Amino acid sequence: MEFNGSPLGATPAHPRSTSNGFLPAISTVGSGNKNHLPSYPLSQSCKLPRVPSAYYKPATIEPTLAPYSKTPQESTSSKGVPLISSRTTLFPRYTTDDWHKSNQTNYKESKACRQSAELLRLDTSRLIQDKNRQTKKTQEESSKTLQVRINDMKFWKTELYRELDEMVKETNALTGEIRELERALAKTEAPLQVAEQCLLHRDKRLGIDLVHDDVEKQLLTEVHVIRSCQERMRQRLDMANDQLRSNRMAQHELEKDLADKQVAHRIDERCHQLKNTSEGINFYRGVERIDATISLPESWAKFTDGNILRSQKERAASAKMRDNIRGLLAVTANEMMCQFNEVNVAFSNRIAETADATDRIQTHLTKTLQEIFQMKMYIEAIRKCIRDKMAPFKVAQTRLDERTWRPNVELCRDNAQLRLVKEVYEIDETVHTLQHRLRDAEDTLQKLAHLKSTLEHDLAAKANTLFIDQEKCMGMRKTFPQTVRKIGYV
Image (tube, rainbow, N blue to C red; front, side):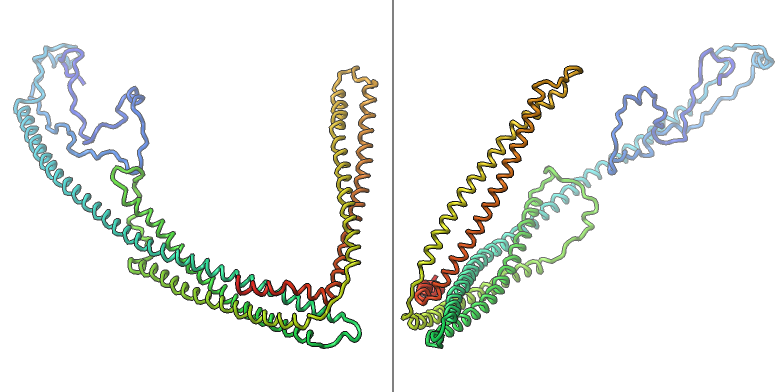
């Protein structure tokens, strides 16, 4: 509003609004300025700084107006006659005392605020220095603790490496002994089969030759000795496999413990090397309240020590098992060798010959194999001929397909069209003929293969007849001593 008698265009100063003690609302900023303000999204941990209540505050002094009285001119204007009075007719809004009082108040508040700020700065500076020293000391202590932990881990890793190497060597040695035992057990099958085969062959003797002589008795004794040795080998093999499983279980525990320690060692090394300027450091809210530990230093060391002790115990048992295996191999080899010599002495007087039929069957088998080879070459030639017909067949059909795209009256059934159609039929008939011949050749090949199988079976039968002969039995037993010697001395 304007006071009567004031100059035109003069507006009185309005006091600032005291309804809000903070910065003016954002809505009061001009729209032109809003367009130039960048908008950045604030994270959850990023907040605007708190605005103190004493940031700035409008003056709260109530203005005191000097009394004034209406002039005759104002009385006249109240009657509806507009009059313009001079500027000297309006008294000031504040008195001089009000002005001095306001200044003194501002001085006192400024001094008090500055003193409070200075005290706060000094106290904050001391607090910052104390906290920096405390934080640095705490970080150094944590680094030292991590270093001690790393040293402990290196010690146990060294112990685990040493024991794991010893266990691997012992496991490999036991595995080698088990393989030798398995080979020895497998090699006893050949002498056993020879002895049983000899008994079966001797059962095919005719007439008075079917006697229960000394050879028959020694063969039965040999079968019993070999089976007894096999049984003892199987029992020792089962025990050795159980020991090998125990070794591998202990080795697995060592490897697992070592792998866990390697991972933990890498993590602790990485944690020990982290600094305030390192990359990759970040906030993890609430991680200090999570306790994921499952062991204590005492139980941690006891666990690894227990794995090492268990491995040492299994290594000692494994070494004893290897000694037992070597002793068993020597004993069984000696028993079978002695019985083998007894049987050979009884077999020394039996001789016969039956090789003519075997030679004739071998000749026919050779010719059959040669014919099979020729037939395979013939079949391959037919297949190649069929494959060679595919390219002309494609060319003829492609030509026919291309000629179907001739426009309008150009689709003429001319000689070229007729010759192409005839060519397709001729090639197709040729392929069918070759395929029929290929099937005949394959059937013939199958017959030859069947004949080959028949001849081979007949040859095996004749070979079995040779084994019935006692000279062939002796010939079959000539390889027996080498096999027995290898059992105990490989």
